[in-house]
Length: 312
Image (cartoon, rainbow, N blue to C red):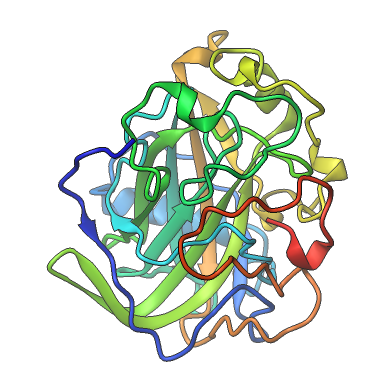
């Protein structure tokens, strides 16, 4: 099932290949961020608000955090676009992420390229649509969408003058043995040319997480409810370390109170050191990541719990 769209493929010629890992000292920081649901053309007032929120934790801007695994489901060549759903069904989710320089008073990082990818409502990733999500779920092809099997729920946005990017997507589902999450990379130093992002380096490889109560309520709705089995809560996840916003836990706001089907807005401020490079050579934090199969990525990773270094 291949969808037709006008998005431009992104090709990245990087001096260094990265797959996650521990960033250089002083490299990464994350803090929660709440704001009105403004577009990425948000005003300078929003920038001041983001900076105030980021710096409220005290001197040094915010608490530094190492990167975590990129997992085995990463694909190069994501599209530069705001809406990454491609018609995939699910509860609407707007992500508003603000990239700031943790080494310079949490000033915005305009031009940072923020890349995200996550599974669909039944736990399937584009590019790996035959991988077993665990539990009992329909085949990915049964969802009725016209999404491109190689690109859905993946994309880039380039941060505006206030360091802000905004994505339109759906609430991710789950798969064994992971909790609900979104993968994230922050790139700097490259340039956007004719819809592509070229060069630069990766400063951060991380994951975004969701409150258990919100996730479990959403999973009772369609189409999520068609995937049955045991959901892994945050406390039992192999990647999330319980650090709240500093570990990637999103601030969530319902679009309509008491009606989760209407969707959520998720917010987070991500502090980086633009001079740091996420080499993937560090130890700990699950930074070794997983190695996707070569060639067409249609293999099925084992459904049993992998080691932390191979987590997704």
